[in-house]
Each structure stands twice: as structure tokens, then as C-alpha cells.
Image: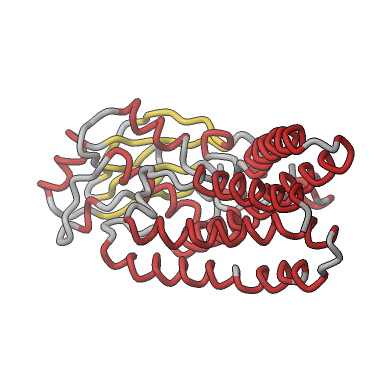
Length: 305
């Protein structure tokens, strides 16, 4: 194999692996946040990058058997989703506020897709290197072209796959927590019956109520998804903390929807009463892929709008 083809494979693998590493950041979800997790994902990322990088050089060298491994890899990376789903489901029992199956499925899909994104970045990098090497007859310029193409590809991919957040769908505002007898209400929406006087006093003194007003009918339909509301409760409790213990079900963050208006309300007793921090946390909750609804894209939905 000519030197510029070998360089294309090496550069494509390196750029693809760097792109995969760029997505392995520890954030509030804390997953993966352990050495074994990084090892697994980086190993798969390097393999995906190599397979993407070798495709065009293999075709240039008329080695069709090597290029056919791309199809085989696509089937193998599906197992990544199953592994992540199983791992997160096993961790659900240790969560004070569970993620919910819809959130877990979304995370599992993301981990599978990131291997394909690394493969695509490596493919573009390698392809640009091969083409530039053939046209310019200069290894240095070929490598430079590959680096630029890979960086642009990763930038475009990252922008293209970035999903919306709850803050894009709703107007958020703080509203008071009230009690109608033992019934906890926020913004006129009943959430639950709390019999203990001590628990009611804690809600009144330390709790925060939030009202989420959908910006359009599509947002209203998306927030009607139970999995999306569970994700809101989980992320809010993770980011601002909660005072709940395992034997205190009253203090589980509650997210309920008003069936008439479509607005969603939330009551939470955070670790520290900081309304602005809670609003910022809610704005950053991702909109789950499985929860997205767009009724206005249909004639019936537009008529209802």
C-alpha cells in the first residue's frame, strides 16, 4: 500500500478516536465516570475510527474484503446499545429518583451513535487525505487537508446531532407551593396528598414550585410524555439535590400536567433553596428522542391548533 494511503489510515484513525474522546466528558449524569467505562468506550471508538479510516484506502488499493468490514461493524455496534441499556437499568434501583426507561433508551442510543460519528469523522479525514495526496503528490499537504477535513466534519456532526432542551420548549416561572387541606398544589394543579403535618411544613418552608408553559402545541404534546416528565424530575434532583431519603416518599420530586391547559408543574424540596439554580437546571434537561411529538406537521394537528 502506498505511503499516502497508510498515512490516511493512521490520520483518520487518530482524528476519529479524538472525536470519540471529545464526547467522553464527565457531567452531572456521571456516566461513564470510571476507568473501566472509559476503556470500553475508547476501545470501541478506536475500532470504529479504524474501520472508517480504512474504507477509502482499501477501495483505492482494490482490497474489497477490507472495506466490507464496515457492514459487519454496523451490526456489532448495536450490541453497545444493549450493554448500556442493561447497565443503566441495573443502576435504577440505586437512584432516589429513577431516570425512567425512556431516558435510559435515549442514553443507550447516544452511546451507539457516537461510534458511528467517530467512524464518519475518520472516513472523511481519510478520504480527504487520499484525494489530496493523489492530486498534490505531497504527503505534508495531504495530511494537512485530512486534518482540516476531519475537524470540519466533526464540527458539523456535533452541531447536527445536538438536540433541543426543555428550555427551548417552555416558559419557566417560579410559583408558590400551596395546600388545599392535605392536597399539595402548584399553580392550581394538584400533585399529591400529604398527610403528615411535618412534611407539609417542609414543603412550605423549603420547597420550590415551578410552572412550565409550553410555547406551542408541539411542545405541549412532547411534555405530555411520561418519560419526559420523569427525566425532568431526575435531572432536577441530580443538579440541585434533594433532601429525600429512602423512607421519605413524600419528598420525591413531582412533575404533573394540567390536562386542560397543557402546562406542567413541579414541586421539589431541594438541598438548598435556590430558585434560579433550579430554573437553570430545568432549562438544560434534554428533550428525549422518544418523547418528541409534532402534531402540527399533520393536517389534523394544524386544524386543532
